Amino acid sequence: MSQNDSSKKVVKDTIALKSGFPLPKGELVLDDAVIMNDTDVESVDFDAKYAYACHLGVDIIVLHPDYDFSQGLPKIVFDKDEISKWSSMTEFFNFLILDGSFELGIRYYGFEKFLSMILKKSDEIKDFIKWVTKINFEAASMASDLGIDGIMIADDIAYQGGLIIRPSLFKDLFLSSLERQVEHGDKKNLTAFFHSDGNYLSILDDIVNAGFKGIHCIDRTCNMELSSLKDYSDKLCLWGHLDVTHIEESKTESGMKNIAEDIRSATDFKGFILGTNSGIFPGMDVCQLKKIYNHITKESDI
Image (cartoon, rainbow, N blue to C red; front, side, top):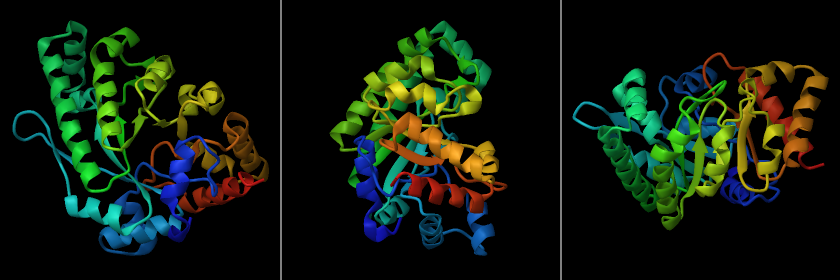
């Protein structure tokens, strides 16, 4: 979309489960290596990424902070100047992505140790969850002050076969933290989305009840088909869906039509943001992805 058309407004309408047109598009990641390869720049600064996002036609930018693990518990590190540029100099809908307690716990403690702590429901894990909630509160407040539109809590709690831990453990240990972060985001006028890889259908009602306005990553290879989310299309904004198999499928006329029909059948193009599950990384056929963008956008206006 042209930035003159205000991507921000279209995305807000879509999150409100209205028919946003043109159909909004967004990617979790625009990898620097892809931008450098496609544009022949030697490094990626704000101007280069902005130009590439406009060329791609996305309406959403997701900003990724760094994490410092060098001294004690993890800390979030921001480039406030960069965040301010995106919020004040563009009309994109800007998300700040933050690791949730589960995701950050695995990064900090390691997979096996963290799962052992979960099973024991140790005091250490409860204190860690409180810490992550605290630093995410602070990050959300900072993001709001700088003009960010939304926060995305990234918690890769699932794999192809379902949740990594029992749903009851997720609810006992982690759900309250997510609920509090959404509540804090609401107070700061930040739209909250939830991201996880894998199949997290077993906790989707909890995600809705926690107050999240949308989810990102709808992976059919994990039996997270759009069709399986049809009953949630009036409760959540759905974002994602495309993967490399869709890109290959779209190279035939019938394949492209099938992709459009799957989206139409599940969402009627309401409350839906088009994009990949992974973001854009080296090796992805970005030219073909743009063809999908263009075709689905036209179909959504029929």
